[in-house]
Length: 122
Image (tube, rainbow, N blue to C red; front, side, top):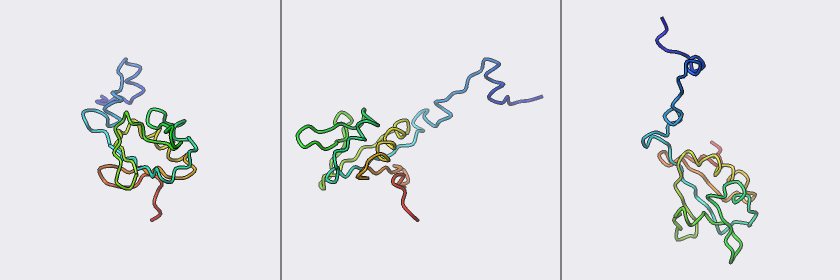
């Protein structure tokens, strides 16, 4: 007698998978990430705005990108911006960082401090 049904068998039997739990997003279990943005070296390409429009905006006065003020980023004394995001928003912000021709968007795993993008050579 099987005590565990494979996922496909559960689906056929009308049972569904709890995707929120399976992806680690239930009850505060989701990983957090920190975006660190070197605004001074932005070249205004706008790729970040295209890839993650909820998180990135173009600033009208100087034409540089900003982390969306509605997300309440912090601005350090050196002009760099920082924002903590949930795992569910990692992909779009990772695409923004990867697409940035100036490579001024860095992403870190919040808990460990490990740099996710760009990957450091070891």
